[in-house]
Image (cartoon, rainbow, N blue to C red):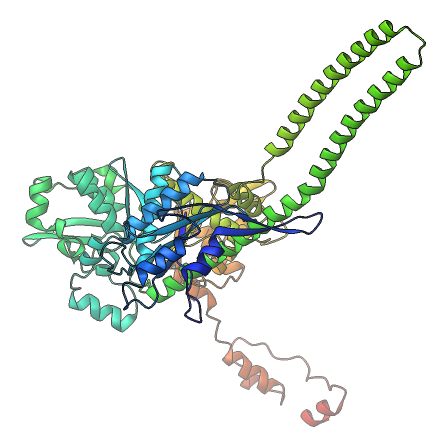
Length: 629
């Protein structure tokens, strides 16, 4: 569900009368005759009468002369595949009025069902009919969006995207900010250490102090609320490439990837990690067990990662929203075309059914004519008329049942739902549809319908990734070579690349994961590197896997001259060394001298054999200029 406050009229002449006419009446165009008719929408109001509601609202608004525009209008819309009743729509309007602080104000609600999305228009008087005080709901966009999540929970609708989202905490659905809670925003205002701030300013890269304030902090706080023991805390930090150790009188957070890096004071990450609070909650410090030390991290800190630009993130978020809006528009067009394509079939079905009914009537008329001309007695004719009428009645009843069943079957064929339609487009390689499928998957996770799955599966599968914490979507599926094909998983949006009908690697967004056969195939590794180079925009690649896989990746990069960089210092050094060309200037100098004169044996460098004969004269002017006969 989404709520929207339409823009005010450009001429500033908003009125209850014109708005009431707009929301309360709709026009219908007959497809066959083209005749235009007007009908009233299903409406409700707390005024005396709907038709005079605009007069009552205006009379109340006139009691407050300081209000220039007393008309407040908002719209609540449901997704295409959801069909609320009128009572549910009216309840949603009342709930939103309460959220806006106008529960006692005059209103008119009208439900519109003439578009692909069922929606209700709500006209409200900003002036209170009892106190004549005016209300203008500031930040109404956020208040309405939170109300949408509340109505979705109460009425059982699918949760839509917005500033607020439904989250599962301790097995209970709660509504909170989608990106961060107000409490998190206050905690994020903790003063950053001077060296960390200086590092970010001078290099433009993310400091460890900023890194620990991201998703790692959310996981740590979740552990402290739900599973307060040391090993759970160690595991939560290990998933993000971090570890906590005693330092001085308190604790510090270190990078597992580079233990020599200057750590961050634990209380900088979260106040709950202060020495006194943490010991009181978890007891005396415990070292991580072997299972924690050997756990594979899904993210790691790198001082080469650029500091995340909030403006860039907002731009990308807006781009994704625009892509999904366009995808929705395409789906609406598909629904309209589907409905239009059904109209001829429906007309043909109804015409055929009418023909069957007329045929029965004609048969009955012919039967009566035959009886009339049969020459039988009056009593016999009456008897036969009665039998014929009985027979035709049975046939008509049977035909009526058949017609009803055919119409029920015809009307039961609904248009394809948006999720299935988007999955079909994703299988065709439409990138916006692939992103939408992944959005559905994340929404299912937030609602707790997919358990505690993570983007990267458990295990040590060899894969490519970058240090950037930015969320990545799969790249546009493409034929990386003649031998490589692709398919899209319609449930997850992951793109699988295949060679000889076998999956060799998968693009799951943040990682390019190789299968066992793909990690041993040079052509598959080359295709994966080409995809990663385009996908991650030339950023340094992290290569994860055993030493044999890393060596194959390095050799494929060198031998096939793929222009990429590695984050691993040793791999990058070897790659750079392979690019250094030998110094041939000495040999070029010797070759240049040999073109101009015939050297004597004493002038040859050591190890050179004496030429058996002088250079041959070449044909053409150039040769004559360079060599004397």
